[in-house]
Length: 261
Length: 287
Image 1 (tube, chains in turn orange, blue):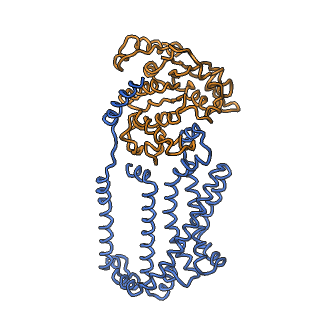
Image 2 (cartoon, chains in turn blue, orange):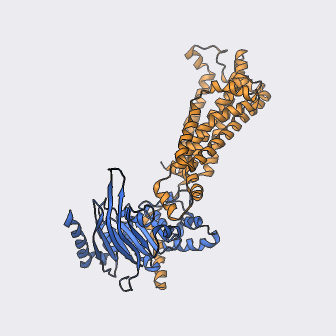
Image 3 (cartoon, one colour):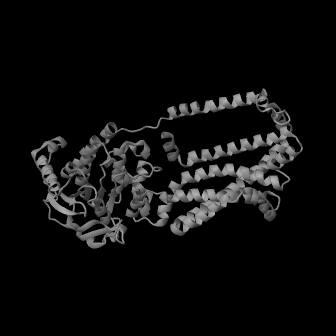
């Protein structure tokens, strides 16, 4: 859908390298990575373990600093973006606070920001409705299934209404059925909110199903192998999954990996 | 676009519960299992007292009645000396609770301070933990020498005995945060104080309660042993005094009362724990 619009660059990864360790025991996690992410685009970072895709996400989130190159988000460096709380983050584990209810968990970022309860309870209620947890807002995390916990984590990441959503394998610990539902709901949420989403995954079908573009990465050292445009189709989950074009795309992506494996 | 939103969110919320499943807390089942685990120890306790009363242990260990009084004799001694025993229980209890509270508070403050300077803090906490290696029997006379033979010296003794346990345990809790949670808080640009109040302290609470429970038991030992040395009141004083006089039923009354006091205070803390950290208690019950 972003392809129809004029492409506005939101995130620019410019010649970024990342080397862990020092004094002879160095591991190069990323080597001279370059690409751009456009506004309101759904981009997946796809690759085998060790290709540095999670590291790249952490660099964008200013949880790590690159050893070379630079990252620009809008006109700013990641640190400024983080301090202005302009991105939300979702990890593989839901990382919910066990002592807080669903609603209190979702309100955490707004509480940290120093907003008043009266200001944010309307926002959290709206988010709870959006992720389909209306009946469960007073439940504690341990009373919820894994999929529902991840819904809470997504709502929490959206609570400060950041323009960018960074997701690190958010569905990889879920079963197939739950994963399917959450993938569909995530696409709905993106349609409603127009977020720019950077999505780390190791699943080829997941990347093909969700993305506008896939950044295919190779490992040792982590670098960009190729960038693929995906034309997203309209239709039901089964229709899309069973379409010839879907199979063609997954085959093409898989081909990227076979080329260097 | 807006119409689409309304239509799409509606069926979403109803279908989530069905397919993804919710674990509802089963209160009644919990209650049943709790009473099931409660009855065997009570039954065993009653049996134990019954055998004791029938002099079963006397035959087994070749003991005379003046060495091990039977329960009915101890009960009678408690009844006859209830005034003294009550006031001495309050005396020893206040030494124990006072010392526990002061020691635990100092330990907790030390742990919090150390958690803000993790590297230097860890060394300081290790140093404090060395206090646990000092034998209490060596400390008791010194505390009496410093603070006199009243309540103050025993409170000081119990404080020293309990602060290290709290400091080590609370520090461990404050530092036991998984990296992803810290990354999450960083992504909200949360400061160190917010991370402490909203995350670290909450995660430390279970560790703090464990330390409090251990400290209650340690505190009882400290208060009684402290009274053995120099004292004119308290359960420990009465115990050592009456053993010297060969008045075993009263000596045993002191032991029984000390035990009951210890158990009662332990359950008080457990009750507060249930109210303060229900999320953790529930997690534990699940395992």
